[in-house]
Length: 198
Image (cartoon, rainbow, N blue to C red; front, side, top):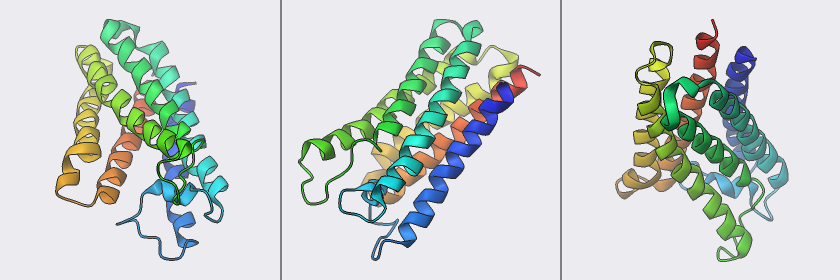
């Protein structure tokens, strides 16, 4: 089961990266420097439903499975680690929800567009404090110190690139870096579970 969590984390990141790359090739004028990833799954865009499934929904559900398994294994870290794992799980579900609530480029104030934005915001708002709590709760446990350090770095990185760095660099690039950091943390969380059970 622990190795399955490690594979699930890798598969989630691979599905997300591959879908972002290949679906963008089929959309004329699309630029990763300028446009949000949600545009690939927006209403009226070719193959939007496929992108929403492969790029958001499947990776988010795989990530949720990794974090659900993590929650079962971090009891020794006390209440901080337990709550942190639950918040990380909530972050995963919010990531998946981006694929359920599709952007409408013609009506950015529509309910669906707003819910997509809320899902994106909930993704990082749940993850940042969740990862911070995991970092604190797991820091004294030898087998979990690597994940503790990774969680602290991921919390700071996701917060910085989701909100702060956008003042100095294009938001589309900053948000992609935040996603990459989140998936890197997810892969490490799956790997840490396989190490802990070894």
